[in-house]
Length: 281
Image (cartoon, rainbow, N blue to C red; front, side, top):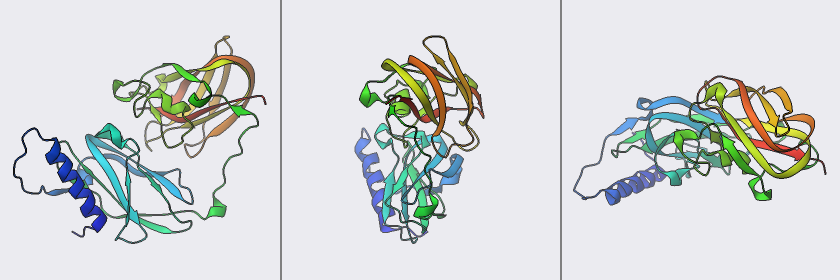
């Protein structure tokens, strides 16, 4: 099996980490490299494909620490770790590949280490970035996005967070209002019963809502949702045609808190990459 220098560095770091974290270091022989397909349950899926970046999503049946090597040849040369690498091993992965060139064919190999030190490696995969002119971003509504932690918004309540963790975790509800499309709130398997309530910090005249669903391809994708205000007003239902971008919906209401409720999905760990709420200028 061909292994690039970047891969050797990765495997070496993984081996050192495994030995360093063992309570009683012992002399061992290198483990056998297993196909990633042995533990893969979904993906790989290339999402948010831009001229200079792409997010790769996979799910594994066991927790692993995930990374990707990529480049314009099978020598690779670039390395990306999972976006929540600091959280240790997990099963829902989405490394983001940055620094790409437009309209270019790229090679990628995914790899990870399991709790027992076993290394898992995918076959070489390819994808092509779009030309810069082909990427059309949806026009944002006028006004200010007030559903951001940085401007005083907070999560008032949530149906659940992935793994039963809190709102500050890797897939916690705060990821829905952090302004970063590469992070996500994921429920813990709530499907059509998922909901998230956001307190904007004060009452605003609201003119538009923005929503981007998370997806794992065949699951976790929201297709329709509604919004309830603190005054009892129901907004929607709103249909989401895809998970490729933030979709915007004009509204006319005044509220401080908004509860986003899933009405239809394809089940699983439903959630959102970002929620935006626009107030009048």
